[in-house]
Amino acid sequence: MVIKRTGDSFQYENMTYTIGQRIYANGQSDWEGLFGVITEIRTDGDKETENETPDIYCSFDVPVLPADVKELEERFSNLYREPKKLEDISLDEVIMAPEMIEPLEAWADRKKKNVWAVVIDWSCHGEHGHLEEICTDYLDAKRKLTEYLTEEFDNSTLLQWQSDDRYATVSEKDSYECYEKEDYQENHYHICLERKDLVMSPVFIREITEESGGAK
Image (cartoon, rainbow, N blue to C red):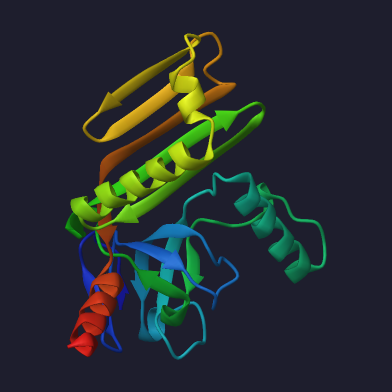
């Protein structure tokens, strides 16, 4: 049997594989770490391999991060015992066994939850830093903002900056910023709350549900 029409599905060991479905290559495959799409499924006498499992044809996206490209090239160079570049590695119509891929839920179907991020960005006389802390509740995030800012007033140069005409201070309900007017990059402190969407996978939701149930 050959399945190749977009939207058609095939059930194998309680897992559904659909033509056009986005997938991820896991650690069972040499293409580990790549994202792609299922283009064709073959079973029985129509298979090209002698595996007992169905042949699932996948086309993988070209990796865009240089580190991912380097890792893939090194993996295939070791596999074939000769140097391999990205253009030497087949990414289209790669035959995969079911255990080598993980179907991905459509992005639009993922549930989302509003969360709050406490975001801090600072620099002071050549040193700099950035911090983000995620909270699921606004009041928790506001409390963390207050704690961080209180600590800065107690232990840093913010009080000196506020009284110095070379610095400007801007404060709103969920943010505070103090910076050197002539050289923002050199000396500034900014803390704020940002509301963000947390995209939740089914695995994450299940884990949270199990933890909540176990805590009762």
